[in-house]
Amino acid sequence: MNSVFKTLLTLLLALAGNSWGQASTPGAPAKAAAASVNSVVDFDETTWATLLQSGPRPAAYLFTTSYCSTCPDAFAKVQAGAARKGQAVPLSVVMMDVGGTQALRHMVHFQGLTRMYAFDGYEAAIRQSVDPQWPNVTPYVVLIDKKGRLQKFIGPPTPKALRAWLG
Amino acid sequence: MNINKLPSPLQGLLLAGAALLFCATAWSQTATPVAAAAPSHAAHAPRAQLATGAAFAPDGSLWMVGLDAQQQLSTWRSTDLATWSEPHKLETRGDAISADGENRPKIAFGPQGQVVIAYTRPLDKPYTGWIRMLRSSDGGANFSAPFTVHHDTQEITHRFESVAFDATGALHAVWIDKRDLKASGKGYVGAAIYQTVSTDGGKTFGPDTKVADHSCECCRIALAQGPDGKLRALWRHVFGASTRDHAFANLSDSAPNTFKRATFDEWNIQACPHHGPGLARADSATNPGYHAVWFGIRKEKGADVAAVRYARLGADGQPIASTVRALPDAQAEHADVAATGDKLAIVWRSFQGKETSLKAWLSKDGGKTFETRVLATARGNNDQPHLVSNDARMVVIWRTTEQTQIHELSF
Image (cartoon, rainbow over all chains, first blue to last red; front, side, top):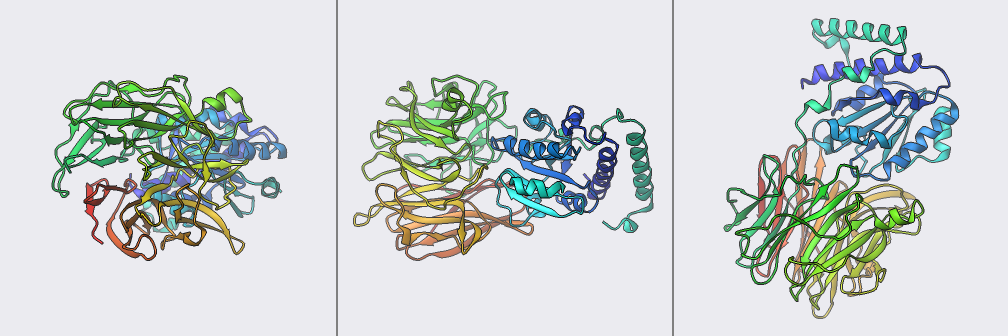
């Protein structure tokens, strides 16, 4: 896909993610939005920079794979952290090894998910565009607070980090 | 992104699209989900399944097994270690086949013309699979229909298999299995290692027997023949609640959980490294043992240091602390190891910038000193490199989207 077009679409989606979050009922559990996720959004080497620049805040991204059986528990911790605060925070899952219907099969493991992405391109190149120091270990979790500050984790975030994330 | 640099028609599209999306989502919470209008990943061709297995046949030819361009299980053969034959397609009766990352088809040659090919067939439920096998008794000219190796047929994990013949000709299939997790419930840590043995080249298999409780869930298992001809296994293990180091076992030990701890990174993590170890026999009469490579994160001077590391293991699998060292590449991934006499090779791949490099670390003195070489580079998707050796030759197999390279190593 043309990279300029993809960047535009990513920006549109990011903007939409912001407005969607604002339109949600304050205090509603984040999982209310999960039922509406029915497709997978491309995530290429340009996507992360666009999301950092223009994506929703606060937000959480969990990078996972089709074989990562420890990832659902990590996502549940993030979701519970948001729910405890009573905030409808965008919670995204990024599948690194499969897309389309294969990725959507994993929806059931991520209650509270608001968007699912899937890598589109060479995995190592996309991974290094997110974090050059990240070895291919999942879950890799990024928490972004309302000021755009990042906390990154291999494995589930700590309770302290979850509290700091949403203030 | 600098919007002013975009062509004007795209600016218009962007502004109009953004305005429409804002209006739609603000007007009604029941508006069509934004994701439904996104570029759907389902429209893309699935990622190429490049993971392959390879082995030398008794006649010295090199065989490879993997999925061809039509995603059909096939074998290729090379007699000159430079070119491959046309693919020989295998009948798998419609099995889905895992051929990505740590989960690759394997091939092994036994005595008397026996050849087996093994793969994981993923089932409908995520994280589940069965170990399937095809067997040949005529040197690979003809193969059987696929059959399931293990006796347990629950829809659970039986994945990440490894297969090898021991010196007696017994075929061992070893895999990661979650039957104990299912039976024990949430309190069971990780998965388990199981094996089954065939003494007739894969016609029949003995019972599924447990090698160890509490393995990590999705890393490949390394196998090597010991000096006694029996197989040793090295796998990522969960020690305690969440320390993901490695365990070493003699597969001929009848009792489960008789393994030794082989690495001490003390990596405490609830995560899936998907990065299994490599193992080779140290072929030394005066200093027997094994060479091991593995990935882990350990604390060094208070900092988390991720690395692929090498160590010499003793004959019982315990590491010799003075030999532990990191490979000379912070981006090293998925290393493999092979040894013949004092010649030792470690290969890995490393991505930096736009290219993946295939690198080798070669030793002529059994691992005391090494020389680093870059064997090749490639762009785009590629398989993990695999070392294949027999008594006479040692080669690296590396499959990229363009070709499957063979690099014969000279020391």
